[in-house]
Structures are given as C-alpha cells and as structure tokens.
Image (cartoon, rainbow, N blue to C red; front, side):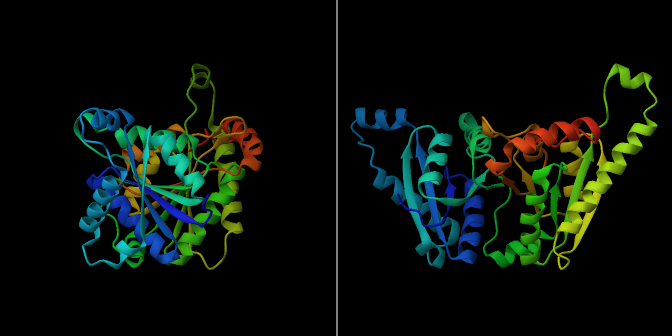
Length: 320
C-alpha cells in the first residue's frame, strides 16, 4: 500500500471531468503532491470486450487517459509529468473510495455530473454515493466550470469563500479549515447560518414573535463565537438568513460572488459520513465549487447530539 499523500481525480472523459482535473492539478502543483487520475470501467463492458475478441487492456485505457490529459492541459504542459494514471473495474463509487483509501489520498476532486445522454447521471449518482460514504474531503466542481489553469487563477476567481454553518461542534472545524483557505488566497470569509421557518399547524396558532427573537439571539451568539475563534488576520463576515437553507445559501453565493463554498458532511457514529439534503440541493442549485468536509469520527456522537439540540432550540440544522 502506498501511503504518500496524494490527490485523486476520477474522470469520465467529459468536459465536466476536464474542469475537475484542472482544479486538481492546480492544487497538486501548489502543494507539490501527487495527482492520481482514475478511470473506472464497467465490468460488463470489459467482459463484453473480451467476449468479442477486443481483449480489454487497462494499459490502453491509461494511454487514452494520457491523451485526454494532453488535450486538457496542452501537449507541452509541465503538469503532464506529475500525473499518475490508475484504472479500476467495478462500480464507480466503491472503487473511487477504495483507491482513495489505499493511496492515502488527502482530497478527492470530482465533477458533479459527467457524461450526457443515457449516462448523464453517471457522475451525479456516483458523486452522491461518494459523499455519503467518504471519510476524506471532496472538492465538487460544476460541469460548466472549466477549472483554473494555475492556483493563481483559482485565487483570483475565489473572490469570497462562503461557509454555511449549523452551529454544532462541527462548525468550528469547518470554519477553521475555511479560514486557512481564505488566508492563503487573501480573500474574505463569509459565515452564513440559515434559520428555517417553523412549519406546523400548531405554530400557526401560536404567537411566535418571542420564539423567533430567541432563535435569532442564539444564532447570532453562535456566529459570534465562531468568528472570535478565527485568526484576526482573516477577514471574516457573518450573515443570518431566513428561509429554505439550500435556496438561501445559493442566493448568498450568487449575490456575494463567492468562488467557493465550504460545507460540512454530518455523520452518524454508526453509519459514518452521509450527504444531507442541503449539500445535495446546493450542488443542484449553485454553479460554484463546493468543498465538502467529512466530520471527525471522534466527534460523531457529539455532533449528532448537538444537531438535535440546535434543531429544537435555534434553527433547523443544515445537514450538510
């Protein structure tokens, strides 16, 4: 097993995965780490190829990947020398997770969607399952984004980093990671918490002015605590919004011209990290890259308990 740190970028030869590969290369170049480019082949197709006498060859697949990379970066690009190619056979999500685990990858970079036509959901469904089960951070890039050519390009495109927080224990780690990105890129950080309206027949008959004021006060206090925990050299703003979490977050990202969203993936101590509805809908509503952070397993029980508490007293949590 190779334990050298590395970045994993699964591709399906689409424009979307070309953009993801550019992002992955920019990050790998900056940190001087390895970039593993992965293609996952359908076992039925490899078997069919063998039966028809085509004799599927993984080395030929790697040569196709190299040709694809040459088109993405240009045949003379120095990036090509840093790429390693790997081919797996099986279902995409489990194979991506297996390779990431065995190669000790620090980051997975993948496009939200890949091929069109009958296979248009290939990377959509694959990304969803990887998000549900990953224990490693994932950068999800939109298919319309060509990706940066260098990290300097990425820094200019960031503009602002938006960090949705649900005010549980996981929010502090999430904000700290985002602060590191913001400091490195020299861009401001915007902490956002969305209070979801209380919806029930009982709520409609009650006077909720006092409750809403309490929820807002607790949320503002929570945002202030997170801001105070971040380095003073990082420019930090905070925003409290009301409404549907995913829709409000997508509006904030668009209106504030954010170039990156850093969200947490809440987890169960029994089932591990899972993708929540807010993260999934954000990926559907926004065209901005999203860095999804899985929780520390040691904090899983505490995060689950605090999520329930926040849901009942402050706001509906953002189950990212």
